[in-house]
Image (cartoon, rainbow over all chains, first blue to last red; front, side):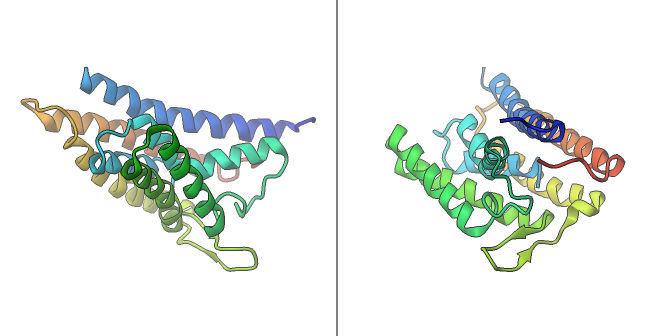
Length: 34
Length: 174
């Protein structure tokens, strides 16, 4: 399957945003509970 | 809604402290994970019919409930996970414009086109979530400091997204 550049840009942007949105509160929470 | 969904996950932590925050954070973005998978599979629908419509979100809710209950045997926790997934749909109706069902109307206040209003709406959800989350933390002398750190980090993320929306009106979709 060949993806156009826009498809890949969308997927990377979405996954990147989701990972940041999950990692930031998760890392802060971990620090609080140490 | 973007970072506002994190507010829903944080609030749910207060409802059931035994649930790991990671599970709640993954659950709160379930329809967006579905969008990513659909894009990769070449079945992406720009309106979100297969990921954000009422039947799609109900299916994701059922899947999340079943998966969490099967792994942990914690039925109450599974209900909380299900509620978090379902909350995605209601929160998106505040800021987005989403399909209801095949052939049905699109609904939502579409605040994405008004980034300041979007920031206010998401900020309110983040604020309430952070306050409830603060009650799950171990006792400490200045609990408001921890709540402020979480609140500040999430509001900064949301502000970045809203500014990016202001600067780049139309990013390419899948």
